Amino acid sequence: MTTDRSQTSTSGDDHADLLAEQQGPVVLGEPSAETKDPGHSESGRAGLVTIVGLPNVGKSTLMNGLLGEKLAIMSPKPQTTRDQIRGIYTAEDTQIVFVDTPGIHESRAPLNRAMVGQAIEALEQVDLVIVVIDVQKVRDAWKKLGFDPSKGGLAPTSGEEAEARLSRRDRKLLRRIRHYTDQFLFVLNKIDRVRKTQLLPIMETYAAVDGNIGVLPVSAITGDGFSQLVDAIRPHLPVCPRLYDGDMLTDRSLRFLCAELLREQVFHRTRQEVPYGVAVQIEVFTEHSDVTHIQSVVWVERATQRGILLGKGGQMMKELASAARAQMEQMLQRRVFLEVHVRVEPKWSERVETLRRLGYSN
Ligand code: GDP
Ligand code: MG
Image (cartoon, rainbow, N blue to C red; front, top):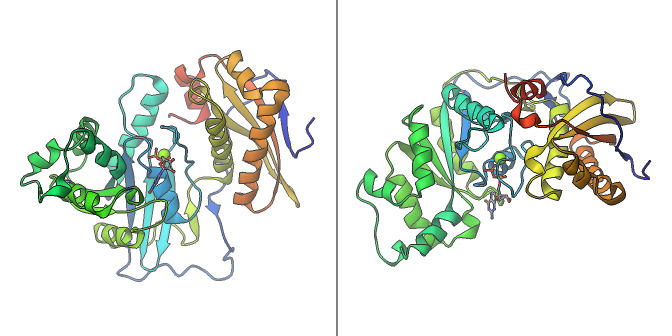
């Protein structure tokens, strides 16, 4: 049907079994079958850390940057991350298991409710909560208000004063977080976008907020501040053995990650109404000796969305699938034969039962 190894199809309205069976966890890099992982020493620390923050502040980019692998999909559009993905950072005597969460936000739609539920759940189980803040946004908001603390030493003198400088959305976020924990670490992200003189007063402000146990400036894109961040996290983890093998990067299957890569391409290439009406399901994931065969379904809510996704003469889907396949091949380090079918399931995102079947809720 196509000249590319990505194959797209416009046919098929049958509802195959939607239960995607999980495969084993992902181990990337050299297999260490012979050399058994020794784990860390008796004073080693390990624990769960969750990353929360408003949409688009760079939570996924941060986790991926720390792990050096592309685990959680990234997109300039908010709310790309629907599922929890654990990313495992292992260094000598430290194992940080990051739980990436969807942005915490208010919504009544069932899909968003399931997302928020997962974020909250993540807060309850963890050893440390990291709150990511976009410093570029803070700088811009302050500018708009005519507030320029870099012109004079205007460090806030109280938690209240500091909090009054935060945006309404940040204050609301903190209120929600404080339901679950009274301690959190601020990560001020995107420092590559602001000058030092602008960054310092922002750091002082967040440092004065009640409950914070540290303010770490980083750039998730350049990696600036990463080692200081790991050093700041470590003391908050319990002294205990590793939770996962040292060579594991995520608890998610390759199959799941491939579905995410395909969904990411849908996000990148479509506008407005399509992305949020989309679910991706991998029906077949078979590893042959020379190629991995992946058969997938992109579920949309309306026939018009299907039309948009396919594009003129199927051109859009052809390009989309080809790009997704390239990403999958890069991740799997082997050739991929990708088939993509687009099917219409009216109002799938409103139907909790469907959400459940697709694994977004339990
Ligand atoms: P999330 O919604 O919080 O998970 O945010 P993402 O990780 O998807 O990032 C949202 C956008 O911010 C993407 O376009 C990223 O490339 C961008 N971004 C993330 N971190 C940084 C950073 O440190 N510097 C800059 N300049 N952009 C960043
Ligand atoms: Mg994200």
